[in-house]
Length: 474
Image (cartoon, rainbow, N blue to C red):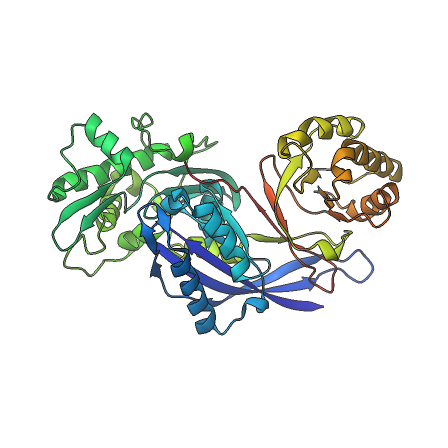
């Protein structure tokens, strides 16, 4: 059994907007005598769209109509219809996630791009996607070492650290090429990000909006940005007091030193390739200067540089190729309630006997006065769960969600271990007739995650799932 599905990745970044389409091959690797083991066995890029400047109505407002026009054009150029796209993500990244209409635009675009192209934002996820899109996980696995990817865009630098192919940690800093904008025709500064203004005031750096650019001053600011990045990677010290971490984030806690680096994002193009331009301000920002200063940074040079599989397209490649997971095949679901998007995850930590109490205590945190939203109950489970334990689990879940069940929202249960089909059947017996139940397994979640569950694939045996943290920058 083989099946292919098309995935879309759409990245609306600080500087650029990009679209990528890929094709997943799904196959059953079981031997015919065991439970089906359906996995994604292949990923192939079908189409990489043009790179557009992200359209804005004003400095604080995304041009939603302009974004839709770009998406429509790229779908037409790729020869792919909205109905053909079965999974993927539209992700809003960097400084664009700070725009006042970011959440509304993102949610509207996810439906516009396809039934299960999900909406997501947030620096942690962007770090993960750009790392995978750059192929840093593969490099870390191949070299048996700790390798970090730094995705340097217009508004932020997202760091993801991998050891032997496994993600260790992420961080995000407000460091990017468009934190200072310049009128390329007049060489006057037209915008300075507030953290850069604070830095300039504290360090007595002479820079102001409306002033003439001084390349030596701007290069000095870029060198400081480089020092902040090397401090974040524990390659140097002395800059941890500078307020550049996004959303008041914290430094990486690395179990061992980083031995390799990859760079992605628009600024990485200036690091790996010479930019043929008569002016370093050709793009109306300090991106070229930042790339040059990072390329000269002595602390970065002491670590091995690897060539990423993607640079400027790393995040969009990650959004299109690494957001989707498949459930296990031992699942139970009501297809009339699929797909579901942006469902908050109530993750349980207690043992079976105390789950009802924990659910009852935590559930009100996800509701607004009444059970007005769909919530997913998630826990690890056990590989050796007996049928008696399944019955106890079902009873605990039904008791803890009693008020929620009266609301009529589907009961969604997510487990890591393969117990969902049996659990789902017992839950149905314990619930009102025809009550909608979606019980899936093979999915790992954390407190604060959101889950999206798509329509069935592989002959209805598995469901595509996207786990995300839907957080907008502040």
